[in-house]
Amino acid sequence: MSAFTAISASVEQTQTADSTRCPRSSRTPTPPARIFNVRQAAEWLQIHPVTLRRLVERGQLRAAHIGDTLRFREQDLLALFEAAEVAK
Image 1 (cartoon, one colour):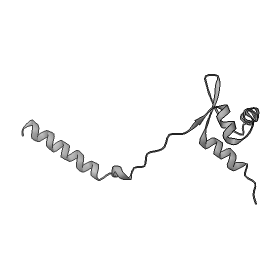
Image 2: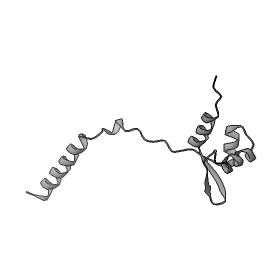
Image 3: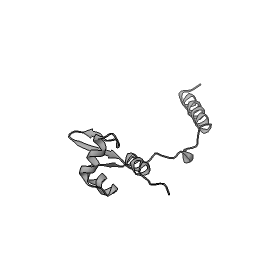
Image 4: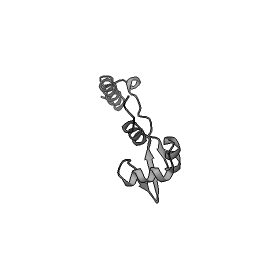
């Protein structure tokens, strides 16, 4: 068996194995998480930045300290908003 034939056979086996997996077109990439600083998060929630910091201090809102600044993930802001919704 020549080297070319061996490589061709290897590539064919790989392609066959890949075809039994999920096709690439059906894979949905995960969108990157939106990250907000204090000012942006406060504007997004329409609250004062001091109120936002108090929510973090009370443990009602998750935040990450990156350097000397707080950062918030969009999903955590949404969770806070959904938890605060008033039932009709």
